[in-house]
Image 1 (tube, rainbow, N blue to C red):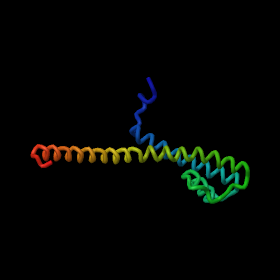
Image 2 (cartoon, one colour):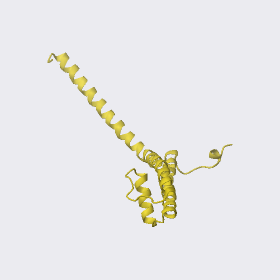
Image 3 (cartoon, helix red, strand yellow):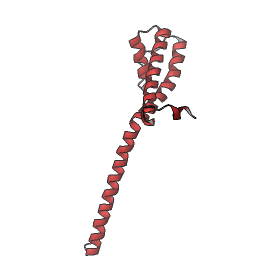
Image 4 (cartoon, helix red, strand yellow):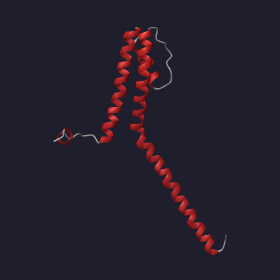
Amino acid sequence: MRLHEVVKHPLSPFKRKTLYSILLVILILAIGTEVMHILEGWSYVDSFYFISLIATTQGPTLIPKTDVGKIFAAIIAFVSVGIVISALVFVFGPLLGTVVKEGFDYIEKEERKLKREFEKDKKSGRR
């Protein structure tokens, strides 16, 4: 018997993935903030600001002074950008998919309506 068959999780798979992705963003921000605080001696606010700007691809306003800080910033940039993009996809992907589907459904409905009108006009000899 598998663990997921025994343990009943109160969240749907979508909600669980969304929760995990949000927790992962929080975790990477917390780790990045703490490491930059230790490596560069910045305040927690400055460290959090730096990491959040890197994670959202806005580019940091502060520049690490130590080589280790620069290397860590480069690595955390690759990791955090991927995590943030994944989280956004998990959270907003279904919403965007629904909006796109509704748009295509509307276009198809209008197309069918125009075809019916065209056929009706064609039969009546207007065109």
